[in-house]
Length: 378
Image (cartoon, rainbow, N blue to C red; front, side, top):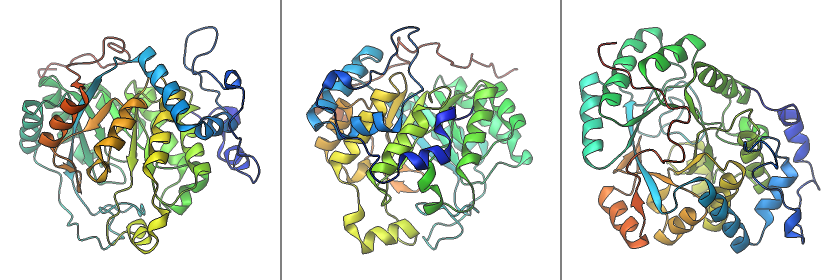
């Protein structure tokens, strides 16, 4: 997987130069459509100017367009419920400025070893009983060691036997490790690009944007569905949010899953402390909803997941996100180390909004890259 020829980091940086941010066209028909005239496959040739035009639309017009695209490709009124579990917490050698699990930051998070397989499967069973259809597991590693892979494979097979979608985020993967996960039956692998390429070094210095794309390529080549998104509200500009969406929407093939997180400021992390000192740098709710809407328009077939940060969002903001095309949330009391709304609060919110949990894969998406079931005996 590579960025298209026009989408290299250097070209992306050029597109963010002064005076290059496009404004909304007065002629609505001039704005791009998510599908081409022929072939029916989603576009992957978006320009930064086109994405900037979408961001600049009047808010109600943007939501209308996003909702229209959403209804063309997804079951309206249904939201997939997911659970996220930290199976190995803290001690990560990366220095991500937002992350409480980095060994570089004094956030109070204690490092743990990889959870026992039985404990993980017990948590997965509890999530299934609570209504989750997708179980995501995260390990605070730069990359998994080969010695960890047998346990990881056993976990994937065990969760798959419960009938849930599986997703893991373990850091950078080699092609061989990706192949092992595919053979185990992993449905999705999460590896967020975090932010725009040109803003990457302002957030993380221990790895490069290109290394993220390399792992996405290894995942795609192995035949695993790609889950990749990022975080907004890290003090970035709208131009950076344009670049973030552009980088995802111009991959050779769109991620099947696009989580959009609102930064959860954690004391002791560089970005958490920065936002405590300069609260005006925090993204406003309308701009967050705009980001969801533009992601939906540019990646029409992807699941757009309303991820971290919901605990501090009003129900009105979350409702606008659903209107804008978000069709998945992470439920439960915790997301890795951050607080989350909780099952009861989410059930009550969805009931008030008249939304229903997705019972299974959407009929319109069923079979699109899903890994065949792997029996335990294999």
